[in-house]
Structures are given as structure tokens and as C-alpha cells.
Image (cartoon, rainbow, N blue to C red):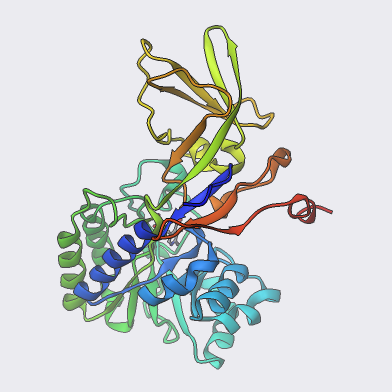
Length: 373
Ligand SMILES: Cc1ncc(COP(=O)(O)O)c(C=O)c1O
């Protein structure tokens, strides 16, 4: 195996293929379409591989739609909280489904979409979500996402081909079944007028304990009952547990008996979900704190006081130069990184099935400089 340079985001090809096979199996058995939400993962050099397994991808912006079109070679399903007039024509160049967040936007752009023979969806808000983390709950009162049933017209405009909702986050198939019940109750009367229903993301079907057969039954029963095409657009499920972030300890400091290993990466710049959600990632070979063992915080190499997470215990004392591997650092990492403090951005690469580490991109001073002016 080639040496993995530190720091690096390392996608493991074998693990990605396992997820792709499972997602393909669900789509095939349930007779639905599963597309990849690009917002979770934008490592476009492997889009040709992903494109072989999926029915397409969903975009949230012109940039994502263009990347899907150019690198995966498929049309995007594009939804944005608000489309901008000056970008809309180009978005249509790369998309075959446009999903509007409001009837305002639908009325503003519908003629343009139909003149290009593309499909129109409207995002619905079921006002119900089992997601307890408010940062990821799209259906809380006052949410800016989607149209609630009380704002729906008696007659659905004929230009609308489908509905879209997003109400889950790292959820199981039983949570999906609950949401579908609410959707059916509130919006079922419109189903005869639409061709497709996009169930958004948050379906973590590649998690070990996920009940795949229940998902397949739920989806195919719903599809048959309403005679409607079902589309899923998970993000995390595609790259769940498919790789790691490798880093190195560059110093160890101690204050009031708390030892912090300062790394060549940063939580805020490279693993922002850890601070936003927040959650504590797994470190390879480390355990939950047991203060009879050597125990450390992990500190990011930025000046943000809160750029640390802890504690973890290790079998042996850590030392400068040791490798620290954060597990499951592929989805919602590379797409969210910043160059805050100018901290070196991790290299992006793939660990191939044959053990070779192929570097896709290393970051140099110009990458940092070119984001600024
Ligand atoms: C509209 C929409 N679709 C799909 C997704 C992907 O969700 P996940 O990565 O949780 O599967 C999101 C995530 O925020 C979303 O907002």
C-alpha cells in the first residue's frame, strides 16, 4: 500500500461498492428510483462509478447541477429553497426535474420549465418529522421549507408533475412509514394528479441495523397502492462508513490535568458536523473515557476556542507524530470544509480495492488564496 499522507480524507473503494450494491438492490426490489443527494458527497472523480449504480443525482444549486451533468453524465433533479432569475436558464440546461419550494416560485418560473419540456415538482411540508435535532428538522413550525397543506389550492395546477418532501435524517424505515402515513392523510387527495413522489433523504439504509426488507415492503406497498413513481434521494446512505480522515498529532499540551493532542486538522474546518450536530466521532483504537487509562482531548489546529472534542482513552500514552484516524469522515465533510485560519486542507484520495492509495487532490497555497481576493 502507498503511504497515506497526513492529513487525508480517504474513501475506501470496497466499502463504497458495498453501499452502492445495497442501494441498487433496494431500488430494484422495490421498483423505485434512488438518486444520490450531491450535498452529502461531491468527490466527483468517482461519479462515473456511482453513475453506474444509481438513477441519477439531486442538486441544490446551479453548481451542483452542473457538476452532476458534467461528471456523472445525467440530468439533475434540482431543488432550491429559492431559485435566482439570473441562474435559472443555466439550471435548466443541466436538470430535467425542477422542484419549487413555494407557489410564488412555481408561478414565476413554470412557463420556462415547461417550454423546455422538463418536469415540475413542488415541495410539500408534512409538518411532521421524527427528527429530534432541530438543526436537521425541516418540518418544525415556522420552517422555510415546502408548502403546508393549508396553503394548497383546491385544484392542483396542471403543470405540477410531482411532489417532494424531506422530513428524515439518519432515520430508519419505521420513521419513514410514519411520515408516509401523514403525507397520505394530508396530501393523498392530490396523488391522482401527480406522476411521482420524491421522499427526500435521511434514509440510512446502509446502517448495519437498518431493516432493509421492511423498507422494500413499505416502498412497494405505497407505490402499488397509489400507482405512483417513487424517488428517494438519500445522501449519507451512499457514503456512510466508507472511509476516514487520517491526521497526525503535532503537539500535546496540558492544562488543569486535561491533556489535549493538537492535530494537523480542525473540527471546525474539516469535520464541522461534529460541532454543529454536535456528535463525537469514533477514533480507531480509542475507547470512551476510562480515566485509569491515558486519556486525551483532540484539539483542532485553529484559534477557535471550541475547536476540540473529548475525551478518548487509549491503551498507551500518545506521543507527537502518532496517527489519529477519525472513522466515517466521508459524507458531509469534504463538501463542508473551509480554509479557516488557513489550516492545511486534507488531501483527498481513494484507497483502491487493490490496496493502492490514489491521490485525487492535494491542496496548495493557491487553493487557499483563490477563495479570497
Ligand atoms: C432536500 C434534501 N434531500 C436530500 C437530503 C439528503 O439527506 P441525507 O444525507 O440525510 O440522506 C437532504 C439533506 O439535508 C435534503 O435537504
